[in-house]
Length: 413
Ligand SMILES: Cc1cc2nc3c(=O)[nH]c(=O)nc-3n(C[C@H](O)[C@H](O)[C@H](O)COP(=O)(O)OP(=O)(O)OC[C@H]3O[C@@H](n4cnc5c(N)ncnc54)[C@H](O)[C@@H]3O)c2cc1C
Image (spheres, rainbow, N blue to C red):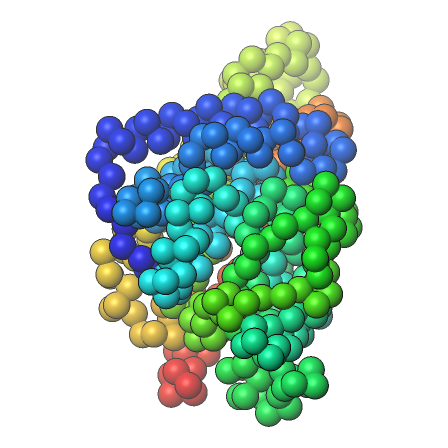
């Protein structure tokens, strides 16, 4: 992790206030973008103006000097307003964390001040064939000046419509564009690049273009589009490092920021549930409760349900904040190297299971009105489903851990 200057409590309070204001805007405009399946372009300028994009950039480069926990808190606060719009900007925080940790000093000196002044970064890595764990089919063909031209397609390009900088992975080929046939050579050739991302209002750039293909169950407002690289030039200075060996040591920026998104969503589910269930009256009922007047706030399973939500939100906060603190304080050094990534990732998988439970149970507690289009609960139910996919997912985390415990020598290789 790159060094960040310490931020005082008072300084962080001011930053958090900005996040709360932006979160209000996300809350206001989010529903229309969910309906229209569009990225909230009107949030780009307010995001830049808020200065939050510079949160993790060290002070010496003009940034705010925030750490992992500060970033997590800001991401959750944005998500409390609208998780889809927040998930989009989350790609910026993730990639500043990952790329910033792996860059050379020269690269930091060039890119950090740009981010501090408002440039936005995104990271399309996943391809069609296999998601995040698939080795890049995208090719980086060497050029005579030492740079590369990228050819390929990334199908999960969140935040492309707002970004000024692209970070991505591609496999360096021979001069004829052939990917190494040997598996180990292929792993070593997979590389991490950074470059300017300059596209016009139609998403067309020089050797790169955005195709608006996003059409999914939820998270509509993320604008997760397809990015075509068609001879996109990356200069020699755009090579950051070998991708897999580099990324493995800093992936906490991904999994803990995804955890922060879904922790913010948990808070929103609790808030909306309390708002509805504290007021709802059923009138005269004949069913489990037979009465002339039934107020749902007096119904046993609804009282328990709200208590269950609040408990899960609090437990998730403890798991997330403690995991951030463990990483910042170096407690992760106590874990075998092979378990570092999945153990850090437990915060995300724990929160994912809890948000999925809550979004489903909220609909059951609120009743049929929650199922109708436009109800916040049907939206949270759809959006929470995305938590199953971002790395690490629960199944893969358990595989990592089980493999290590059953055959530590093999797993360490
Ligand atoms: C809303 C949203 C936005 C996203 N934005 C981005 C983005 O901006 N950039 C980006 O790069 N990606 C993005 N993604 C993609 C995401 O991070 C995953 O890469 C993608 O969902 C596909 O990965 P997967 O593992 O779910 O599916 P697949 O890779 O197709 O996996 C299929 C199955 O195989 C299992 N599996 C996969 N790999 C392994 C392995 N190595 N070992 C054992 N089992 C394995 C999986 O657990 C799953 O059961 C986004 C996803 C969502 C939902």
